[in-house]
Amino acid sequence: MRNLIASLIASLILTTPVTAQDQPIVVELFTSQGCSSCPPADAFLHKLAERDDVIALALHVDYWDYIGWKDVFANPDFTARQRKYARNGGRRMVYTPQMIINGQDHVVGNRPMDVTDLIDMHHEKTPSVNLTLSRDGDQIDISAATEVSFSDPLIVQLVRYNPDNKVDIKAGENAGRTISYANVVTDLSVIGEWDTQTPLDISQEAAGDQPVVVLVQNQRTGVIEAAAKVN
Image (cartoon, rainbow, N blue to C red; front, side):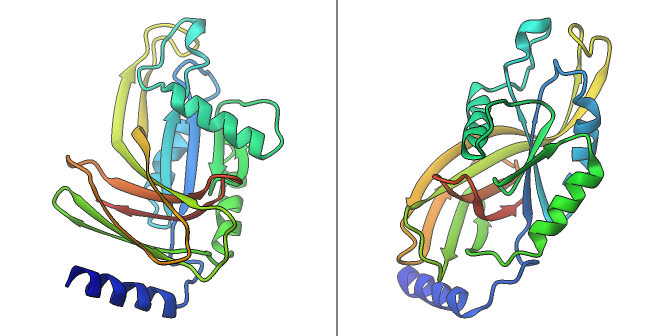
């Protein structure tokens, strides 16, 4: 019965046109509590997090920890992710605050107008993958389909984050400040690969009450082909 339902859903996905407004734009902010230029970008991410058409994620990097304050959210995996984006884009340097839009375009995170322009530009593109999520308690059901031919499998990633966080920073460039951070990523893990030749239909355990984001990403180019969120 489950296979029949999955087949019907996949058929519906394939026959329903995907429009640019059907899926949110992913904005990844690479930030650090040790970066004096980051607080304006951290504040702006709160505004992006309020938008229904954006999935805003804060990924704290660890390469500023040496200058006097260790970021309590820093994760070397996020630093590696940022460096991979740089390699994909032919850039030799990484920086904070940096925002990556749909895994493709980068912009200084404390320039709201430039960020907004890039989000609008990505909304004008027709998504190549149609992705849907549903949640039943701790189980996330993930369905996706595409009519585009991809040469490599796409990776399916599950993201968990804490929506609101405040930190008293006692040392470093932001010493003495209490800063509020939106959508701090606590886990970003690959849960599967999808060859795209047949519709995707998988389930994943996601315990707890944190929101759940699923990203379908091209591992060669870094482009996020689809994204969805459930609370």
